[in-house]
Length: 358
Image (cartoon, rainbow, N blue to C red):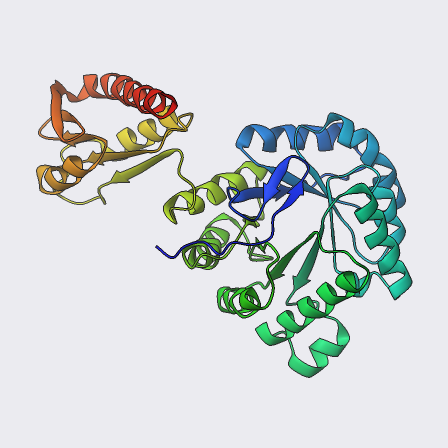
């Protein structure tokens, strides 16, 4: 696998971004930010889902005014999402852990300098958020909504901040389709050393977003590009975090959690495989230790996969084997397999965890 590109490290609250820090997962609340009770409830949901940081929209004065109280009850670092109104960014800088703006739409250079100075004084980073569908007029007219236009916009906005002595920057280059998103990040990567926030914007509902994000974000991660990420889904908050963690896991950029291999459905299956895999997923989702689990429905696939997995079930005719680290542990009837298997998985996870700590 390609080595991850090492970038400048910044901090969003207590979460390091870039350098050799783990790739962090972000999401965004959809409540009105000034509704502190509703927003706090969503922040809690994202915390328990495993998010590392959360963005909140600051669309009006009362949103900006609510940030101090919201920060006091937030379990996660807060990023204020601000467009056009630089005064909201100045207010936000007094409370939040980072600000997301597009400097080009904040207004005059005096306003941009005021935001940069406020963030520098308080030691909080700025994310430059470039969106392929809303480039500044000069870049849209010259390049259209292309990767080149996105990169030129990013470089322009980076220079605006650098000219005012500000360099705690991360950058995102989001489009609503996979090829433009990937190409923009690839083009900009060799030109700057700032950390990248990965995402496909307006990615759609769960199935559409999963595919787009797996292709674009997973592809970039496997090329060594990316320091933090969001999977944008029109849907439930927790799904964004769940899909992001899966992309990190299967791109081998996150070394934690359970990875499950299971058979496709076919005529050789000799068990209720769908039910068994769903149960294993549900019962092992709390495990953070890296484990490769295999749940195979017949002898054809089971022999090879079970041998190479950390722990596996290999089904036969109304019974199955539990195989751990290549050795058969036991043979049981199908209705007794799940409980024993979960027990063996938890024991193995505990032993692996203890061995890393000793």
